[in-house]
Length: 381
Image (cartoon, rainbow, N blue to C red):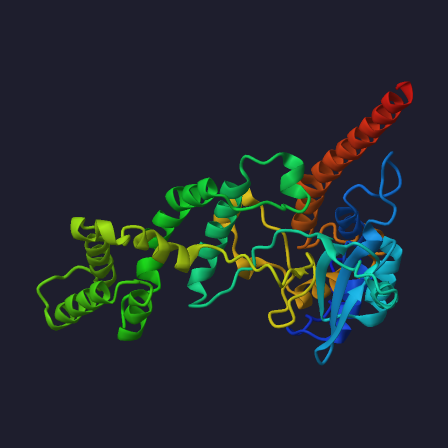
């Protein structure tokens, strides 16, 4: 192809077909996955550069790989970013998950089991909000906003380090109440109730009635809703009308002594509040590729979660097309620059990773100095 008077030959790269494959992944893992940032995060400052570092910390972290054909490799562990990078490039996992930090190296758990001492136990893990889309894709954006808002409400009074490192906290009564009044009530009534048509069918109505512990009250509401269905007097949306009837019935004076007034809140919680799964604590790794959609798992800015659009997240084929256009001249650690992945990685690095490592360094050094002082005090005695 000739350009202007320079008569320079330029080859226009072909677009990469949409999809997900091992070949695509190998290129992505070889060129774009930010191994260094990823590993620094999971080290939480235990990199050997600060006093009081736990040299064994990162080596006790579990990584889980899901290979092609659903082959699972659990309890992988790595002592350095180079080891992690080498293993990912070699195995080309379709899915990368992060497990807890264990008391011992998870890859050597069998050796500890043979010793007869049950020392292989999880000692630290991240708090996970796993968003499941159960109704329709229109629910997705609302769910992201609700979950992020709830998470912010729950941890608002925690110190920065507690928010970043593990988030190992109990959901207190106060935080649950704050979630309801600040986030969930309006989310349920303004967004979820009508967009998801929660009272639009007999089956959906019954699911809500099943949450009422008093069968007589549930039967009374069912009869009212059946009467509404046969009547065309009210032009108000059925979902709103039935929800108001439910609230009026449950919160009326005659039901005050039956403990039904709180049932309204419990229904809202059952449809909106994130579930805390204490058994399955595997976390999807950031910047891995979703095997069904082909999209990159990117971090979300909680301050701008209302603006998050999942369809705008880069896809694997899109990134490969950008690499093609750049002539694959991206061998540096910052090969993601000037690509559609740049904004997400830069946000992860500057807004999350750097403040986290600063806080971890301060905590490690503070704990180390406290131990030194304690040791000096004991010698003085």
